[in-house]
Length: 496
Image (cartoon, rainbow, N blue to C red; front, side, top):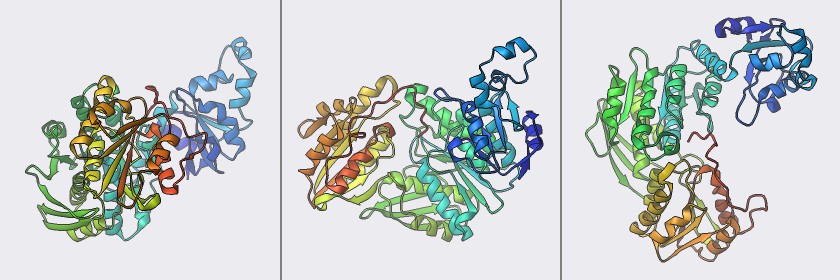
């Protein structure tokens, strides 16, 4: 519990109304609980100020609002004539009799300041993780290690879902409670400066850069710019902080420079590093032999691909930075079963196998998934959905997926989406393009048998999980509301 006056002082906010206590922060008026403080965030397509009255009626004890929204409701304005001219409809949405308000210049920035203030109340190790690919998997691997270390599922706070941007990450920090002994925080971005902002809020003891590749090019222009933006994560490290770097990435030298005087622990499969791994694929997983400054690890992973071996190395290196014993690291990694929508092997109709990698996509993660598909026995089908945020080279990146699949020996390519159609010419014989999910699923159904493996992958906006569902059910109908091809807007804010 915290008093509004405490928060007003921490945020340089103006308190209007009674000085009440609140239990939790909420930014969603549909999920208000009694005792909440509602923060009225504003975005391109919404304004939380319109839901203040509803939130207060639902049990919120107070609301944090932008100064201009508060004034637009007829509050705090010196000019009575101007006040009378304000819309009574606007006032009715925002004002609520005898309620309390925290008035700030910008609720979005105030949320960040609140999260930083709350973070300082907890003297626990926090690990921040970023990268173009694999950051969610690394986060979950490390969380599994730390839960093994504590013997308590509730002792580790880890980012949930896609809460890795300037709204989601502060909300995650605000979930810190006394039972937490570690926090593992994922940081995404689609423009320079975003990770710098996030890491300064989180104040990590360990900061991990997993890799940099062709993602968010629409907002950054080049892979080198992406790498530099990822390297901003080291700006939040304090005295004694440790930077964890992928020595196999071509931008490793840049990240070492950005880490400055901080201790650097690097990991790699193909280059010399403090934490050195050797990966041997076995079935739908493999064995990872790891040499560390503290000794040797022998880890049997349940997840496939050399990219997941590197993810495991990143998690292991971060755990070593936290001085977690080697035996605990091994146990945590061996108990990790994967992340939903990321190379999950499922049973499809007619005995076929589907590899569900539908959570998201960029060129590097596409290639990694194709390498996993290439290891499958029998007939292999690649279902390719459009990839977003690739900038001027988007068409070429999609064509490259066709040539990569052909080089790896994939027998068939089924494309869904305007951009993915470009992969057909590079793939050649065996490629088809489909206008909608129903047609694609109907064609796939004729190909399925016990000797067929289908990889399904595309960016989030394509909702490629629809294809997985029809493969599992054996039905081509996916519902009239979901059957068409999704279209990507360049204005969408996505942090992958």
